[in-house]
Length: 85
Image (cartoon, rainbow, N blue to C red; front, side):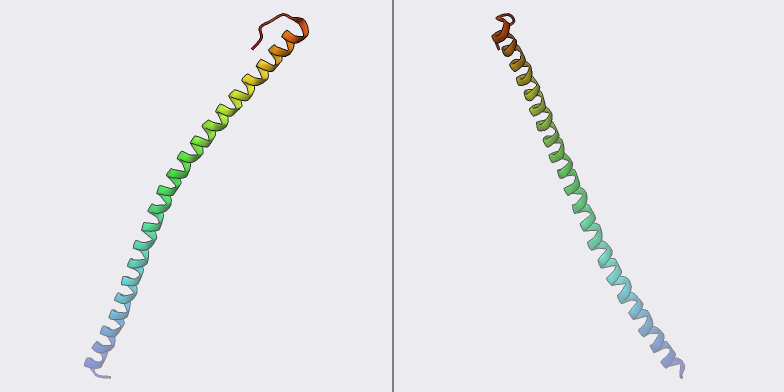
C-alpha cells in the first residue's frame, strides 16, 4: 500500500468520524431542546397542581363550614338555643 493510499484511507476514516460526530452533535442538540421543553412543561404542571391543591383546600374549608353550620342548626332545632345559620 502506497503512502497516498494510506493517506486516502486515513482521510476516509477521519471523514467517517466527522460524520458521526456531526450526527451526535445534532442528536445532542435535539435532546437538549426536548429537555428544555420538559422543564417548561414540568413548571406548568407544578403551577396546575398548586391551583388544584388550593381548590381542594378551599373545598375542604367550605365543607367544614357547612358541617359546623349543620351542627349549629341541628342544635337550634333540637333545643331552641344557639344561633341559626
